Length: 356
Image (cartoon, rainbow, N blue to C red; front, top):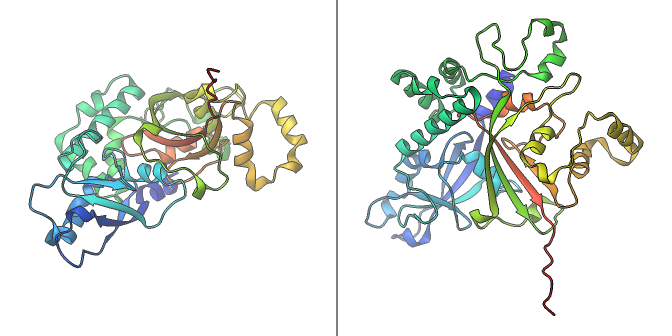
């Protein structure tokens, strides 16, 4: 499990950052800045690295830094990796962003005062996650100042996973029981305790997982991600912030599909990949569905007449929906203990009746 978490923690996105043309005061204009942005980081934390590159050409005034992608102001409190997964259906490398040092769009973005704003947004999310998991946020509220500083430094200096684990383990926010690991190590099942208990290390296990879900709805169908309609307004994104209850049934694995269904029940019929009857039906059609296209087959099987799931992306990957949800949570969760899921849904065209 640690290896997968390490990959997530060290993940980075190559950015090519352009200064907006309205703020260029010299000729020739400056070249774009190239930088690797940590997936778990936040765009405002990049300002100290990119401002020196553009400082000689900026107009007079007070810095109010913000970024946009193809004209869409980027919400600074959403981790950089999530923004990339959400706004680039077909991954763009390097990711071309525009930086502004003037003209902050206060009607779209909440104010940001640099690193302090990002830090307190992170801490507030951590408190929210603690409340969802434990029913209170005392462990976060009672953090010592040195621990709080070390935790934040481990996030902004992405790559120091060991320091993060050392501090965050004191919060007792826990992990869910890993069904994938349990299958691999079935001999140790008797020594494992059920979800909701405390294991031998004192780490609290839980059945409630904090989720931030970003749902992008489209009306036009597309086969290739490069043909996906562009997101040009935050109004096109439905933001759902709620926990997933992990319901363990004997002999069944709670999957990513089960989690998505619990978040978006209106788009999925009540079925399970473990349902024996549906399994027999799938066996009949096995020759029709190549194994490499299993994830697409699962999506089509579990979309309703009203909507079709086109994409589920977590930490830059598109996992198969039958993967154990416990593995997803334990390996792909962000440092503030929220699991961020980007989902693209195709909705049917709404036919407006004619008055005539």
